[in-house]
Image (cartoon, rainbow, N blue to C red; front, side, top):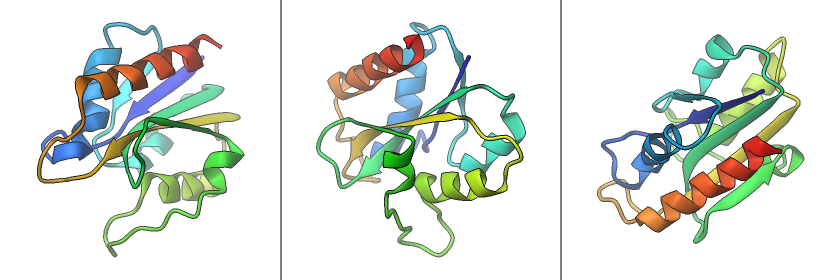
Length: 139
């Protein structure tokens, strides 16, 4: 079984991409799907031993929707820019080290983000992320 979590702030420009993907995906995909806002650490509370975890989030510094899996994801050298904000990747690394049970298979779908003031992503980009999610959940 799969757990799909969507991250982002629905009111913060491109950071709302995860929320928009959640709105589209919940009608099209049969999996346990939750929108967690900006708190990746909620995973430790809501995780129910699913074998596969998929995270969908806005990602700065990319131009296309990306899919990273397991070690590709954990080998990223992603660093937060602010003392009080932690990136989803950094949070996942902490959770992997501290959770008693952690999913065997972890995927990240990154949606390009350029601005937190306004939305610059298109519906096509959200649709591409949802199609990518469909493929992952079906395998």
